[in-house]
Length: 234
Image (cartoon, rainbow, N blue to C red):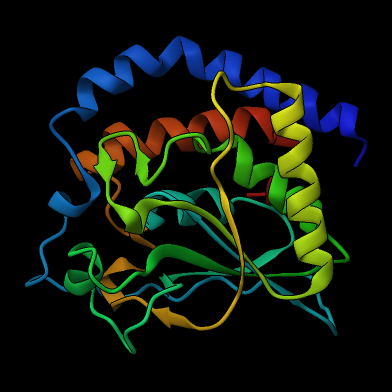
């Protein structure tokens, strides 16, 4: 993808976001990701639809961009993405629970582990979606979700992913598309712990919940407008 296209996409997304931000901010002030779930009610995990394209090779990307419910809902839309799992990475505790991660004591970030077909969608295109669907300039914070678990982070799986993530981070910073510097962490992937079942496929299973209706849905709708040529056919 040419850099010009990358920056044009980002500029259009930011202009569109500015129109809806006041409404989203007002509604979301009473809502946070950590407050909306009920751990006593386990939502059955819906079986993800298999990608119709056959492939002999897949790659993995791991991103943290705030609440993993939002990240999952966005990346599930992209053609070439085969599977998206919500979970935890970057911490010091084995098999952490959601409650432990939310305490901020384990060092984990909420992330999504994305399995994709590189013949259909490239890692660069995934990075484009990553940076355009959250604010990478707010440290340990996305909207009203605050804490180290909500940090912006790319966990790279190989040297190529590291190079591309660092390259685009620098180019976006140099372009000054945001008023503040990008604080996205770029670190080597170590371990991914899949989150509890009720976190998986959360938006599709719980679309009428307040957080889904007022925070995730507007983000998904904006994403679908900007990335309409890259979405899965419905």
